[in-house]
Amino acid sequence: MDYILQPWPWYVSGPLIAIVMYLLLYFGRTFGMSSNLRTLCAIGGAGKHSDFFKFDWKSQRWNLIVVLGAIVGGFIAYFLLSNPINIDLNQNTVKDLDALGFENAGQSLLPPELFSWDNVLSLKGLLILIIGGFLVGFGTRYAGGCTSGHAITGLSSLQIPSFIAVIGFFLGGLIMIHLIYPILF
Image (cartoon, rainbow, N blue to C red; front, side):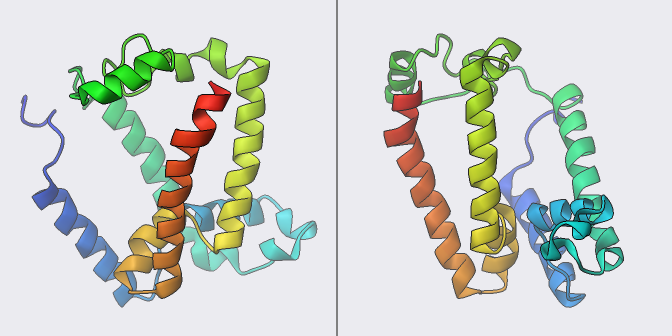
C-alpha cells in the first residue's frame, strides 16, 4: 500500500502524457486549461457581452472533463495520496526562503506564509490575487493559450509560437521570483 502513496516515476507518467497527447492530436483536439475556462464562460452567457465567447461551445464539452479531472484529481492527491515527508531542498534555497520570512522551508508544499486564510484575506493578499489574476488572464489571452496548452500541446505538435511562449513563461517566472517577489514580500 505504501507504494501507491509514492509519486509516479517519470517513466510511468511521461509515457502516459505522451499517449494522451498522441490521442488528442490524432483526433484533432488540443489540451489547455484556458480553453476550458473560455467554454465555461460561454456556457454562462459571456457571449452576450464579448464576441470572444461567441463560438460553438457544445463542440468543446468533452474538454470540460479536464476541469473535472483537475478538481477530482486534486482532491484525491491531497486527501488520499499525500505523502507527509519533508521536501529535500537545497540548503541555499532554504537560506533564501528563511531570509524571505519562511519559517519552515521544505516542511510543506503549501507554506502557511503564502496560503493561510489570514494572508489570503488581507488587503495585500487580495490585491495580489486580483492583480495576479488579471495579469494571468491578460497573458493567457495575449499568448493565445495558457502554460499547459503551450507547453504540452504546442510543444508536442512542434509549434514555434508555443516554443517562444514557453521560453517567455520561464523568463517571466525567473524575473518574478528573483526581482518582483522579494519586493512584495
